Length: 108
Image (cartoon, rainbow, N blue to C red; front, side):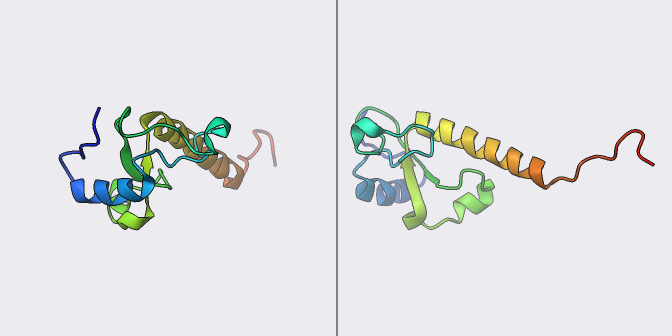
């Protein structure tokens, strides 16, 4: 694979990839410590099709599109998928803890 930007929003992709060194910027959000590669994912645009997304992967598409380029991160598909799963699980747990317990069946 090459460092060719995607067809849409190529200027934004370039603005994120250049400072990132065309390397995934995950530093553990996926659950991996990336300990063997300086605490950052080793995948690069030369080997993987990197994507650009905000750190908060739970934003709505409209909110994510409004995030300025300097606040976006380069993600490899594996780190993005794992980080999204972890963020979704954390959100489910947060909601579970916030929701009141249902009334007991025989509570008077």
